[in-house]
Structures are given as structure tokens and as C-alpha cells.
Image 1 (cartoon, rainbow, N blue to C red):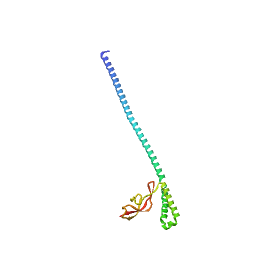
Image 2: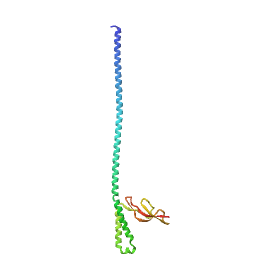
Image 3: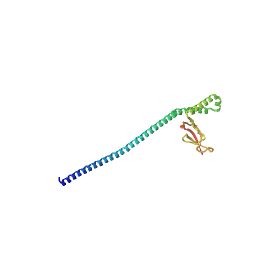
Image 4: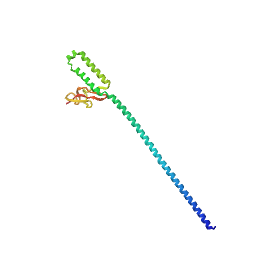
Length: 194
């Protein structure tokens, strides 16, 4: 063989080797790129999983808080229902207390002497009724000589008065009551004016 042929064969082998090396380098570069893509995809997937975990945890905490709020509201409503369940009955019973007071007030002084035993019985019954009402958190509204309060008093008349401050309750026509601090029946009152 001639030197030229040998040189050509060597050149072809070198070219083949260079192509193999170039192909190998390209394959390695593609593999490295794929590996980098996989790692970035894994990194992208990990925050996604962490975000999902955080979101699920947040939803769980919110659900637990909502359940606790529902439980507290239910308990509060149950207590209020028990506390104010007798409101209608108590309101009806107040007319009995009013009638006992009217019976005592209607007797003149001469009649009081004749019906002393009956009068004492009615007064004792009225006092006992008030004790029972107070036991169930039903209390009289103190109105006389108090400033007029539209939350607890209902003004029926304005009465001219020189010795009382305007807006002061100076007459009580009907006793008012509260049940556990909530108005059961307003006091019907007369209010001082100049």
C-alpha cells in the first residue's frame, strides 16, 4: 500500500473516532441536560407537594376552628334557651303579681283593719311570688327617682315638677321586670318636666 492510502485510512479512522467522540459527547450532553431537567422537575414537584401539604394543613386548621366555633355557639344558644325559656310564662305570671299589689292598694284604711288577716295573706303571697321570681333571675326594675331609661322604662305621661330634675321618673304606674338582665316588661312611668 502506498503512503497515500495509509494516510487516507488513518484519516478515515481519525474522522470515525472524532465522530464517535462527538456522538459520545453529544450523548453525554443530552444525558446531562435530561438529568438537569429531571432534577429541576423534581425541585418543581417538591414545592408543589409542600404547597399542597401547607394548603391541606391550613384547611384542616380552619375546619377544626369552625367546628370549635359551632360547638361554642351551640352551647351558648343552649344556655340562652334554658335561661330564657320561661320568658313567656314569667310574663304571664307578672299579671298575678300586679293583681296582688292592686288588691293591697285598693283597700282603704278602714277596710284594712277589718280584713287584716286577709291583707296579711295577700301581702305574704305577693312577697313569696317575688322571691320565686328572683330565684329564677326575674327582678324588679327600680324606676322611682331614677333617670328615665328608654331601655327599661316606658314613659306614659310627663308631669310638671319643680323639685325633681327633668327626665327623672317620679311616678310608677306598673312595675317593670328583667330576666337575667334582659328586659321582660318595661316599667310604665311618669317623667318629670319643668
